[in-house]
Length: 317
View 1 (cartoon, rainbow, N blue to C red):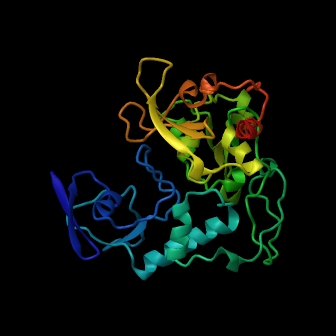
View 2: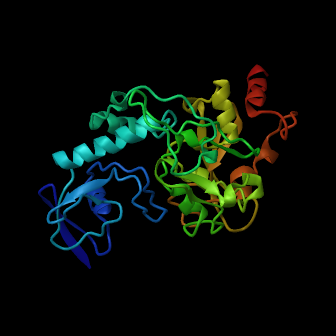
């Protein structure tokens, strides 16, 4: 069965159960998304995909609203564009988006988002995890509050930089029933103090985390990042233009998970999995995502040597 909706004056037929986002994409209508991913359940968190539906009092999220027969949808009205602009401005004024997907800067340009109009960023206030939720100092009106905070580096596999977190909930969904079913993380706090946290705010190594890294694979802003990538970026030698991506099959078991090996200077710098693969849907276990050091034929002590030092050694050989 199929349903027919009208999008920007054009009749569009989609399968029964498809979303408005599916309908838009079938017609190659560029609809921005941040919290949406094909292999996760939509959570309607970012609201940049909103569209206007005739008869609806409010704008509706295209990523989760099911297409219904006879719907009349507009994706580029002044109301829609203004809403998207404001969402992008609020995010960019409070969050470090320097390592976000490159499409985000394109959307900001498209909708004329100018986060600088809210003023300069306020100085960091230290560890935001220790702030008492709901208690705020009076705003001066001269600076913009941000989520700036120190990066959390407590293991050798990945790091967390919540100054780049937009609370898209993707990591929570991937850690939960959409993929891993570990439920090691969730959103704690309310309002501007909302943040991703472990149970009882314990350290990651003391939490239920199994270090599968599926949260990294879905993060759109670099708030969660491979330790290898982070160290290379810090050293100024991370170069995606010089990287090759090779698709292969994980060698640890017989499930058949596909891997994408990202290599730079003939060294694996990170491992991902294609979302269109029927076995993984983009998700991996700790062995598949992080257990690749055994293929590196180097003399360095890989347990203690930062990867940027290793790569520089490779370049000098």
